[in-house]
Image (cartoon, rainbow, N blue to C red; front, side, top):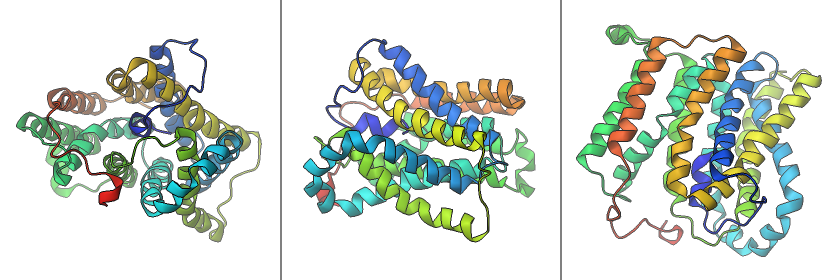
Length: 323
């Protein structure tokens, strides 16, 4: 599971022994999430995107269920009461974000997905300003403008003069929609009450998310788009279910608990770097100047926006009961 879910969960339980320092755990998380894009690109001609997304979470659910079913039963009243909200955030994160990520790799490079995904904090900032959950300062709008400029620079391949007759690459458009979907999810997640068991919540979200992925997967089946059943397919399914889904979630949980959210946020910025390094080394992709320029603009925007002040809340973020 990706970064913002773990930051929002309160009181994470101790899932792993404290052998590795927080920096190592968080670095592994970034590497696993970067590897998810690399694997998705590598098998894009071998496994249909919707099938990869569907079976990734089916396997993840089967793996986590023996460890989490008691927590789900214990808090079942909460899940039954708030299932519409939980289904919505599951649709935005597990269903849409992950499915669109894999789908986009049929038309765009892994490097592009990594760079465009790095703009996520910018879109979260803008959505927070739009909903009024947090007060936004002029420097943050400037940072958002720089971040958006970085995205435009990447999808235009560094040729802004060509934007007048620009035809957006389908893959870049899909990953941009995926980033916006995850940003909506991140903003809504702040309204989730504390005290929810992390593994139980993840289990329920996977189950709800699968209902959103199922129609995409049905489209694959109706069009006779089946994955090739071989060692590559089985290995891919196991990898994406275990490493970028479950292990990354556990490592992130312990990293945030021991090192703090601020430290963890710094390590998220390693994801596009790892994607670029892996894409060049493993996929033979080329890191062009427009990628570097886009990253510079995006990270400059994040730096300018900075961390929100303590007094940024207007009556605090609205809770689930206010929805």
